[in-house]
Length: 237
Image (cartoon, rainbow, N blue to C red; front, side):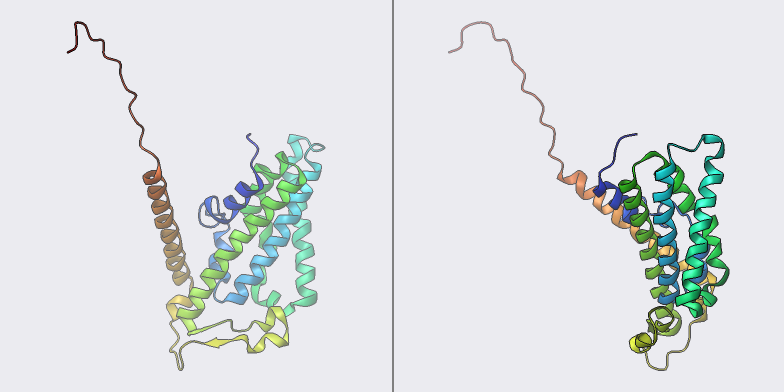
């Protein structure tokens, strides 16, 4: 496998191989809890802690675990970090933990995390594995936040509501009311709205990719045909 640079690893996680937009992994929690920005950010940070920790751990043991027990070992590592994340959230953001509910323990089954452990971390040193885990989680979190913001704005006409659940009482005033007396748009809040919004985000990414590809092809210098020698006989006057 060709060694990737840290820049390539970062771009893959954020854009070209984004777990939510390209790999389409982790869609169950992504669509279920993104009714608001705070929910999306809470799940994103929890996923980031698990993904970075599991990638580093898998990289550390990659030369000491046989193929026969590789996947069970990965699952145990991921489950351990999920348990740590649960305990941290219960200690510091208990109300948000209650809101996210079963989707925090279900991080164990997130294919994006197990996929990075098997596809990247078990084949690479610690630093690239840590960067890969962080950038993949960051790309996933950004999609969560964008989707949560879209649904919160369209569904309730506000943004950044209930941020105190994650950042404490000082964040209670962060709520921004975009439209006064906004009639709640129930479709955006419910799961069908999440599917539609996610489809729009994926469509926008595909459009941007097509335009970038077309621009790159247009900037390529045209291949000039090589000159040919023509043999001339006789006297040229």
